Image (cartoon, rainbow, N blue to C red; front, side, top):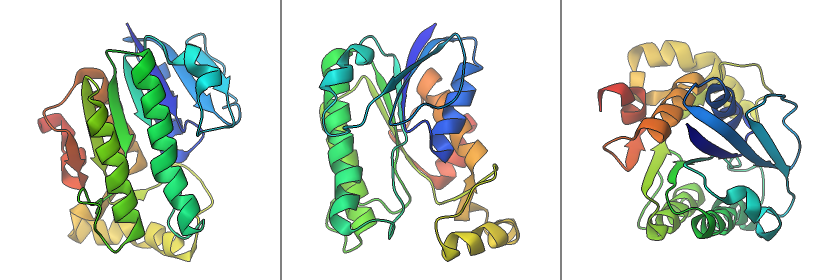
Length: 219
């Protein structure tokens, strides 16, 4: 039985990861660190409501003895100014990962990144550069396993309000486009399934691009 910790459990992918982990027989405890309660009730679930994602000292007790971490915190490009995007993408990731690394010695870390992330950190695109920097921080911490997921467009399988017009259009066009170009993206269910299974059971790749995620069970 494994202990799982989820960051970003009130988001689209984090919520699906939470649901799937709670339903697994090989998961004994699920801890969430979140700004607001998930609204779920389950004997496996332990919620820590925490507001400062730059300092996890107040909840470090919850970070102990964790076997698998799913980090699903993120923000869409254009939703916040560049400095805020960098803080959420890089600084939040660093603060949490360093705190977890201090408290748990045997953790597999699963990070929700994105297609186009640039490991050189030299891209002119803010998203690619900052996601690449966050990935590099995680790799430098040398968790027992690190799996970085780089999905393309994520097609929502549950109702939600889209963040902008582009996402409204993509939701309408995804199915006909994906029938021709399958690797344009994947569904939120496909992504969550892959993250949970690889986090729990392991996998041969550290960085999983969109096609790897779609075919994770054959890796």
